[in-house]
Amino acid sequence: MRYQINKRAKIADQSDDVRFKVVTVVLIVIAIIFALRLGKFQILDREMYIVLASDQHDLQSKIVPNRGRILIKDKVDGQLYPLAANRDAWSVYAVPRNMDDGVAAAHALAPILDIPDVDLIETLTKDPDDPYEPLARDISMETMNTIKEMNLSGIGFSQFIARLYPEKNMGGQIVGLVTPDEQGILLGRYGIEYSFQDILSGRPGTLVAEKDAAGRRLIFAQSKLREAIDGSDVILTLDRSIQFQACERIKQGVLNYQADNGTMIVMDSDTGAILAMCSFPDFDPSNLKEIDDVGIFNNPATFVSYEPGSVFKAITMAGGLNEDKVNPNTTYEDKGFLEIDDFKIQNSDGKVHGIKTMTEVLDESLNTGSIFVQRQLGRTVFQDYVKAFGFGEKTGIELRPESAGDISSLDSKGEIFAATASYGQGITVTPVQLIAAFGALANYGKLMRPYIVSEIVHADGTREVTEPEVVRQVITQRSAQLITRMLTSVVEGSHGHLAAVPGYWVAGKTGTAQVAKQGSRGYEANKFITTFIGYAPADEPEFVMLVKLDNPKTTMWAASSAAPIFGDMAKYLLNYLNIKPTR
Image (cartoon, rainbow, N blue to C red; front, side, top):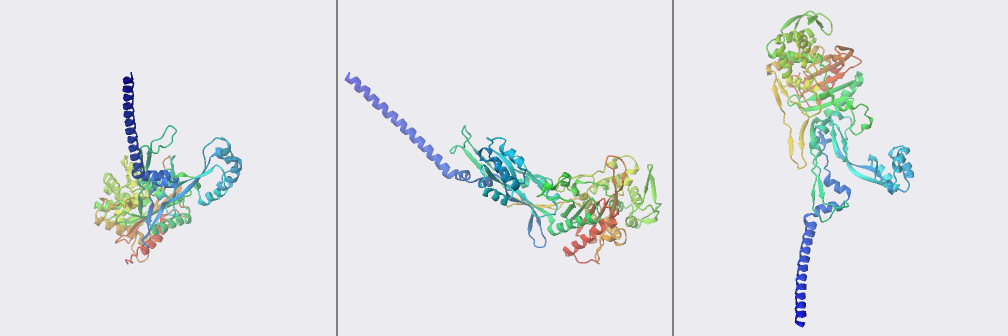
């Protein structure tokens, strides 16, 4: 009996030893796991937990990327200036369930936030258990500090990144605008902000962590931080000084001639780089509250197509010269009108001019002379030249949305459609298409793709530089030189004389076009669009420029409205670019 008891005791002791050893091993394993976890926490995941322990601003800087800037260069000092950059902003919110007196808080906040008392009272008192109510977004630091000093219970602030547009009246339709999405991420709308949204926005970071059933983050659970990648900077081809002068001059032109609106573009004729692009009226991207018509967000230089009128005669003439169908001294007899497909077409002055040369056709802007050239080309070849100069398709400039214009009338049966198109009626084009086409005349017949982005600078410092792109050789160098001499004659002593600059040869063409009626055939009785396009110096062009006015009230002619604006700006450009007189 005693033997059995001792045996049982011995077995129990052995069992206790096994249990002890098992428990010891388990504890050791747990300790090792804990140590490894702690080491990972202290070493491998140290950066992530620093972020978790930091304040909202530090966390935001790790997760939310900085939006890239839109920059413009000034030739005078060689510095880059932001058209669009970032700034810190704040919003104010309320936690009604934590407020002592919602009505008193509403009365105190209403004048500061410029919100009616009744609206704030309703917001702060409608639900006593309400955990969150946004009150105002993007308040100034001064406003935030004022509210903080009031020590109102249940009022809080959150910080976020907003957009800053420091250059006023410098082309809002180029820059565009941004609006926040539901998560507060800025999304580009219109202009460069929209066209380069993916490049400017960068890549948001992520913070992934396991949570318990109550939604609390588990400190030692698997977590991973992927930091944000900032957006890239976009540097424009615009020259800051030229852009400022262009915006000022087109604004004054619209006001002086009482036009509905106006557009000016200056382009480097050798490369296609846009040196200035501005329209008036424009908008301030940092003050959208004053916008009544969202149509103002569209850029008229790229989005709005119109019937160009007599400036198109230069395109028709260039085709005739290139095909050797006419030369500057070729003559025809102007009888004052032509009857085509039951339509009677007259010159703008309604006069009979008799025997005229092709140079005089451009000098006096004769519709019948332009039709003469188109007939020498034939309908198909004329249409081919219209397309070769880039009309009827988008230029590819980095500004969206862009219109392709409409030259579909040239596909219609009947001689009348090609005839009217020869002097710029019955087809529509955009200003950027027109300036690109005239750029080909200035650039020895080479059509360049217009571009407005010089380079993109990525967050890691790498750069993408835009290279000039030749679309095609439209006409020969000889033909380009011939049409240039003819366009110089237009400025020297004819319709375009107000575009002249003393000491320089300037080539250009006027255009006064009727405005088509909306939704019906025919044209408005007293509405016109005036355009002047030219380049200088004519023998070795440094720039090509377009000036367009919609429905000027003080004069209906481009020669007395768009041309003098061109001449004034051309004089500034020749001086600014330090181009010595050529005559």
